[in-house]
Image (cartoon, rainbow, N blue to C red; front, side):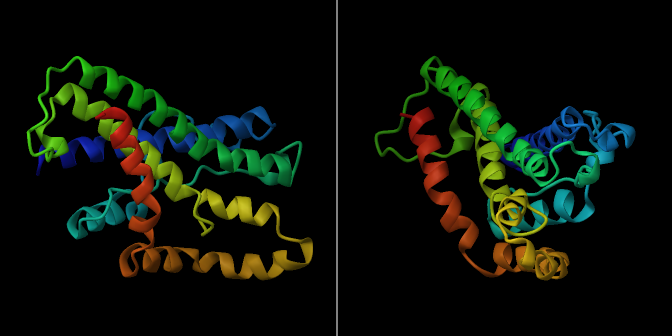
Length: 217
């Protein structure tokens, strides 16, 4: 397996774990200790692994040449225990992608600093791959990329992604019953969007381009 792919998979594991832990931590702040009692506020990857989202989707994406994306097993949250109800549930949902965006910013700054001090000489043609960069630049750059794309991906308004909670928060009460009936089919829609359309690449393209321009200027 190519070194870059290994780094991306490792970055994805760390990113999705911190993503899920952040959901549980914010839920705990608002009064719901379900995630804590379930042993999900841990850096141990085993309790967080979702066979489909953590293994199958990233593997298929790598084979198909798509960005390495995925998700972990959702942290259990009991909305009835949240002091603010649906309002707090929205904040719990937003905690995951917000964490990824913050990690992406920090990693991008580190990658830019490393690149500036790496002595790497850009070829005259201007064309080079991430794999050509020194490892000290590759690691933070790929970590920034994975977190950025994971944050954007999770804002798609498709269950079980966090963007669905944002959409759900603004649905009128009379539409919630219909939404709850459709929600279990989100996985199928998500699978079709990722592997049968170019939606993911279209959405991701401007984000990773801006990241590369910032780091490899």
